[in-house]
Image 1 (spheres, rainbow, N blue to C red):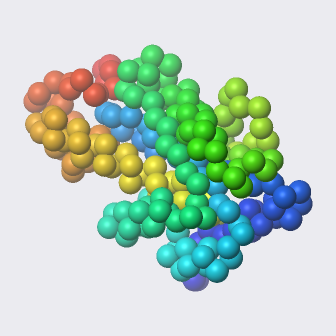
Image 2: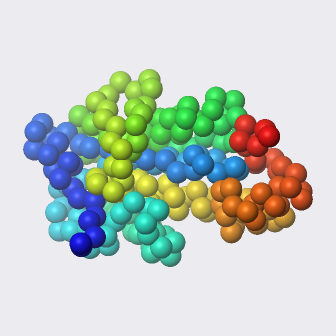
Image 3: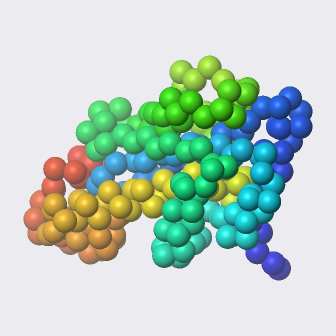
Length: 216
């Protein structure tokens, strides 16, 4: 069975129905024991079909399904492309411990959306429709919202947001590895691997560990 990749069908449908724009939102980093949760909001200008076809040839897909080097190249291309508007948002480990990981993830997504709106991109003046990967919608956001489980494998804008967020968070964890070399964050990015648990047992928690994830 041939591989399936995200499409622009939803973006095009919203554009046809009322001239609106779809904003795809996704986050990465809910599961790790350390570091922030990072979200990205992406909107696509459908005015240049040829340029968008070039992106589809890159096979944008759920960030977890793409090899790291390819993911970095796609993220770089997305961020630089004139048809793509994007913004990042994050919630750090202290916020995660204070309000829980779900609320922190939604906070990061809300920050990404607000960051996108502050950019003043011309095509974002249209009515915005927010498509959120997962089960939840973003609180305190007075806009059309739809949550889609597995949206990063179906909708181009969400897949693009997933890739940009993943690459950005990996870069953040690389910097954490330089600051706290004993924990080897460059290898596991904060996730609960055997190596990571062994290093926590040996050194205790670092300042960027999520205390609420490591109570036991």
